[in-house]
Amino acid sequence: MESIAPRDLARRLEAGERLRIVDVREAEEFALGALPGSEHCPLSRWQEWLEDLAAAEDPLVLVCHHGVRSARVALLLEAQGRTAPTLNLTGGVELWAQEVDPSFPRY
Image 1 (spheres, one colour):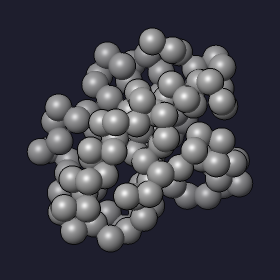
Image 2 (tube, helix red, strand yellow):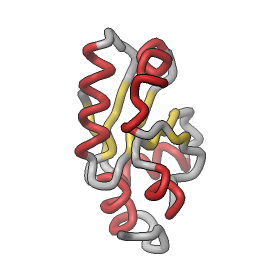
Image 3 (tube, helix red, strand yellow):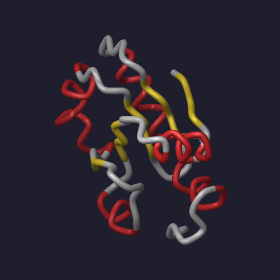
Image 4 (cartoon, one colour):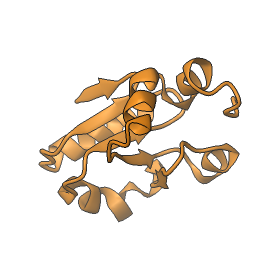
């Protein structure tokens, strides 16, 4: 599993790089705020989406509050045989709010 720092992710997104951002927080957390263009795949429902993400060829960036749950998902995807690039957002949306977007809701 590789990780990506919030500032590096912001630079890559600003450069127009095509990254699929997958937020694994629960619905009430996602409703507070989400990274632009992110899709919601709550960890509590992982059985519904794990197989599809494992087979996806797009580079994935996994996101949660602090980066712990998303790291678990990265390991699950590896166990499913995913070989395409998979990055875990270091520090999650909390560090994103601190380093990239101070207007992002903190909780």
